[in-house]
Every structure is written in C-alpha cells, then in structure tokens.
Length: 400
Ligand code: CTP
Image (tube, rainbow, N blue to C red; front, side, top):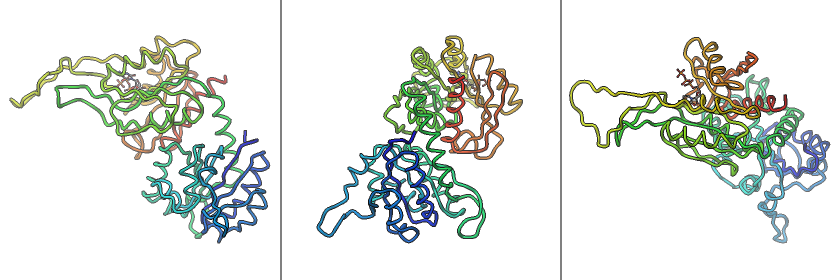
C-alpha cells in the first residue's frame, strides 16, 4: 500500500531521531519515494548525510537552498507529498503544529501540505502527560491528522513510562494498516449523528444534555479519512468538522434530528448513531417567556421518536447500523436488549464508571457487543482511537 507513495519524513530534535534512518530504509523498501525534511535541532541527533544517502534525496532543513539565493519551496514540497510522516515529533514541534507556527521549513511544509499527516510523538513521560501536550495532540487529531500511539518503557532520561516513539517497524505497520483500510471505505456513504438535542421550553430555555459531540465528530473524521462520504447530523456543539468529505447538517431538536436522519439513511451504506437524543420533549412550547410564579413549575413532557429504532425497522440487509448505549446499571444486559430491540449490527457501550470516559471528555472507554454476543472491551483511549476501533469493527462486518 505504500508502493509508489511520495512520503515526506519530518524529523525534529529528539533522541528518537536516530531511528529515522531505519524508518527511511523501511519506507524505501516498501516502494515509497522518501524526502526528508528536518529541523536544525534534529541535526544534533542524526546527520543529514545519513538520511540523504538512505533516501537517495537531498535533505532539506533551510528555506534558503544555497548562497545564490535559491530557496526550497515548501509549498511545492507540501503539494508533492501523498503523505507527511512526522517522526519523531517532539513536544515543541507538536505545540507549534497545533498552533499554526511555521518558524522552520518543516512546519511551513506541514502547513502547506494537503495530504494526510501522521504524527509519531517522542518525548519524556511528563512532557507527554502534560495537559498542554495532550490538548495539542487532541487539536492535531481534530484537524484531521492521525496521531500514532507512543510506546511505554525506559526513556532516554532513565525514567520509565509512556512517551517513547514507536519502533520504525511498528510505525510502518501502522501506516500499512491505515492506508489499506482507506481503500475499503472509498465511496461508501456513511451517516453519523452527534451531539445533544435541545428541546425548547420557551423562547429562552431548553432541556438539553452534556453531550459534547466529540465522539460523533471523531467518527466522521475517521470515516472521511478512510475514503467515505460522510453526512454528519449534529445537534448544537462548538465543534468544527475538518475533512472536505464531511457534509454537516445542523439540527436542534430530536424531531429535527429524526427528520434529517431518516431522510439521509435511505442513501447510506453505514449509519452510526452517537447522538444523545432527548427521550422526552415538552408537550407544549410556550411562545412567550414563562414568568416566574409560585414555588413549583410543572412541565408536561411527551416521548420523542426513537431515531435508531426507526432506522432499525427500515434497515436493509446490506446496510450496517450501529448504536450507542449509555447505561449506569445492568450495563451489558441493557445494551444487549437495545442491540436486538433496535435491530443493530453492534452496539457501543459507554462506560460511565471510568474517570475520563464519556460525556464531555476527550477520552472514552467502550465495549463493543455484536449480534453473536461477542463482547470486546477496550481500554480508555482518545475518542479518535475509539472511533478507529468502531470503524475497524464495521470493516470486519462488511468483509464477512
Ligand atoms: N437514540 C435515538 N433516538 C432517541 C433516543 C436514542 O436514536 N430518541 C439512539 C442513541 O443515539 C443511541 C441509542 O439510541 O445510539 C441508545 O440511546 P440511549 O439513550 O442509551 O437509550 P434509549 O433507547 O434512549 O433508552 P434509555 O434512555 O431508556 O436507556
């Protein structure tokens, strides 16, 4: 899958830069054309001559190409590449990428590139765990980049923990898996719902919930990056989709979401319902602001339509339908009931018991339960990584 691909390897100043030599060799061995762009600090860890020799291309570190005033065109370079691999990516380079800084040619190339970017972080455990770094990595994920996991073990500082760059062969395996998946969803039409719904009480008040929409947006990005054409139907959220293949439809209430989703489902191959849809909505919406009076206020609520159950009724054999379940007790049994009642291919059970998982968090801990009763429990991970697990499961179903 890397054969014939034009890859820019971006090397920044980490001790892990010495592994860039092996990485270049492995990529070239896969049939890729590799150009190395490296920061000046990276020169302290590996010589440009080594990487130029292995890649058979000159290494670029400066905007100026020579004393005659010729320059290295980062825009051309960015457009040339089919893939940009930042390995190792230091905390400093990651922070700059997340904030759009371009004070060296590697960062200017990243900003100019239209291709997919993979980021292999490398740093000490405390730098990796720092909220600033975690927020920067999340931002880069949200921009549509793919952040690779880090390895755990002994670090250059002598400390033990998470932060080591993956080994070159692991990075290449990751790229191979990711790019082969991308072909499988090319042209598939995918429907994703995300976020909360707001049920109006009067012109200024509503009943809502704490859903941020992050899980659904992460799913939409993963699907789009893998070649799918995505319709993202979202309740109110501050999030922005990144990928050009995502068509977003904004809705507010459960009723709006029902109408748009049912319409879009007819043309979809895959649907994943991650929205936190209100189960009840005020029976009457007051046209004027309800004035304060008395010690109690009683609102009469009526049931909303269950969107997922409706899709389950309409589902054709060739369509894949996935739902979420958020449970606080009797989790697995309740999820299994929902799976069958709503005619799903599988259900993603959100755990509310784990710190950092679920509503309002950037991470999630889920279990996937399919129609055969197979249950897979995943660790706490970023919502982008959870999205990848879900998409992988869908791929298995399509392949079966
Ligand atoms: N769902 C939906 N329409 C609704 C309610 C829920 O499409 N009106 C979908 C959600 O997007 C989710 C799944 O149904 O994928 C399960 O949602 P959840 O709130 O866990 O379950 P409910 O069926 O609403 O049941 P309960 O709230 O009683 O647990």
